[in-house]
Image (cartoon, rainbow, N blue to C red; front, side, top):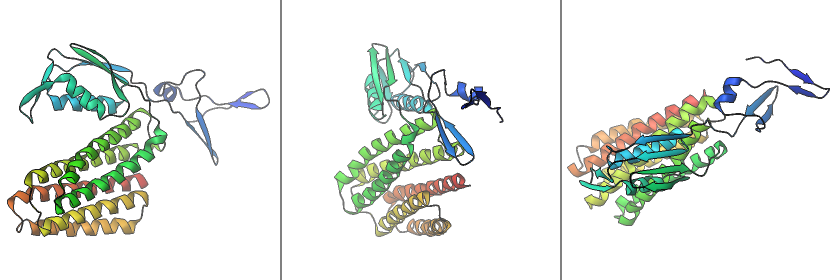
Amino acid sequence: MRRKVIQIADSTQLVSLPRKWALKYGIKKGDEIEVEEKGSSLVISTEKGREKGSIEIDISNLDRDSLMFLIRCLYIKGYDEIKLNFTNTTAPHHKKSEAVSVMSAIYEEVRRISGLEVISHEEHSCTIKDIAQGSISEFDVVLRRIILLMLSAINDLYRGSTESNSPLLESINDKHDTLTKFISYNMRLLNKYTYPQEEKNTSLYTTLSSLDEVIDIVKYTARYLLALKGKLSDETASLMTDIAEELKLYSDFFYKYDLKILEKISGNRTKIMNKIAAAMNKITKQETFVLVNLGQILEIITHLTLARITMEH
């Protein structure tokens, strides 16, 4: 778009802001915006997020897991205040085949989300509010922490299973909750503020969503191995190492876009797929679940790699 320059006195020149952009980010008289010089270009940005305000929703017929997912999604979407109404004070917990307190489920999810707090609670309703407004400038730092913690969780899965280290496997659940908090926070930042290089927004959101899938698979695999209480076969242990190395290669590729690393990721993927197919005929029936999960992580790494390529071009 083109704008005419308005001359004010001798030393001041003005250019009007696009009305649609100003409305989108709630820019008002007196607000400050960032103006950055880049050669012959000026980049105008704001730390203000898209105004989402509040939402009120009836959760009466939801089970415990659906309720927790709903709260997380509304937070990620960018709402600053969420009022939840419910007629029953308990909700079904399908995994345990029992009823749990609605408020206990709400508090459990709120603890997993950065900056979210219950600010009021009545018998059949409660209000949750984001009391710590984030900044898109924090996005890259948080993303690096996510990737490093993900690599740590994969390594813990390998060590915990090969060393029969139950406490290490149990600790993966805490890593999962921390990663969920970081991932949800960064997704919210993308929805409220948009990444400075806006064309990368969709690919970054896809990256976060895929990393969320990986840590879920790692968590469930750790739980399964704790229940299995048996030593893994050499084939499965070797494949865990392969997956950890593939994820580390992806991490290297994410921060250093190098087609040689991309080719190595692709070549390793084929070798790992062949190893999984061969191992299926050697492992016990109980270990099949673990191999299937490793195969899923391998596919997600492919999706992550594609998203990174899209960000570059």
